[in-house]
Amino acid sequence: MMQRTFITLWMVLFVSSSFAAAPNSLQALLEQVKQDRSQQKANLAKRELKFKTAQNKQAELLNNALKKLDTVAHRNATLKNNYDNYNLEIDRQNAVLKEKMGALGELEGIVKQIAGDLDIIIDSSLVSAQKPDRDAILDLLANRKELPSLQELEDLWLLAMDEMVESGKVVTFPGKIITTTGNEITQDVTRIGVFNAVTAGQFLRALPETGKLIAPGRQPDQRFRQMALNLENAKSGIHAFPIDPTRGSMLALLVQKPTLKERIVQGGVIGYAIMLIGLIGLGISTERAITLAATSRKVQKQLEHKKSGDNPLGHIMQVYEKNLDVDTETLGLKLDEAILKEIPKIQRGLGALTLLAAISPLLGLLGTVTGIIETFQSITLHGTGDPRVMSGGISQALVTTVMGLLVAIPLLLCHSFLSAKSSTLVQILDEKSTAFVALLAETNRIKNV
Image (cartoon, rainbow, N blue to C red):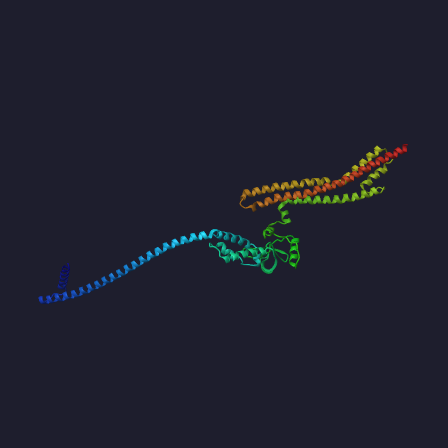
């Protein structure tokens, strides 16, 4: 095979040389062929050496790669064996851990729950305004999925104990306060446990988001603010003070509580009509009470004196004195006539009070009906998604009912009181009238005898 290759190669070179440069003679051709052959052998030897060198190098690289493959395969087998052994050891240790932990396996969940609940309390506590940034351990324990350390459990316990201890203290400290105008000031704050915080007689509530204190736009009644001032100025002793058990929720709702003026405005036109009726009834009741009291005093004085005066009983006595010469039947009729003239003066205005007392609850019922109609109209237009849309009609329905009852009940009481006073006076007049008739009859009997 090799010989054929050389012969073929020589023929190609010979033909190429024949075309490249034609020799001048056969000797020259022979020399040229020998020379070309020698050159070709040298070139082939170089190429063969180069190929053998590359082959040896590739063989060396192959051997090295095979050695590395063997090393890696051995290392892989070793690592796999170690991995299997480690997995077995981990399973064994987990079984031992589970057996030794026992009830401690639930500790993580219990601590997370306690930390979360306590974090809510600490964030909304007034103590946090005095001691900010004390709930870092709670945030850590509430979000971590590992068992807490002994130190962390102690910190959690100490924080809970601190909150319990501070809930029974009354302390004063400099705190940051957000006023009603939005400005932030630093001022001495008196904290009453975890329930209330006051400054300069004003009640404060805590903002959980910032840990600062804010002054609500509306404060409690003056008597409660005076209690706060007394407590702030006190050095020792026991002092009365209102406690907010909701830790500020009631104080926040106080801002939304309507005033008396706002309640009256909610009643609308019907509410104003009920108030007008109440004022009229109050005026009538006052005038009647003063008049009947004065009349009653005059009648009582008249009972003590025999001379007739300017009062209902005196008028009866005047009729008696002018008709001493008539018979008893005629005198009785004249006295009854005089009493009938005095009764309208005594009972004047009582019928109006009865009418006003009856109209007031009816107007309240009218306001209730109109308020409910307005509520249903709001539901028809806007649906029931937002309760504030229905609040106007509901407020009118309830407020007018209350206003009607608040006016009717006092008017009924006044009417009952005034009716009793007038009935007492009428009864005195009837009694004295009967006495005058009896006195005239006795006088006439003595004359006849």
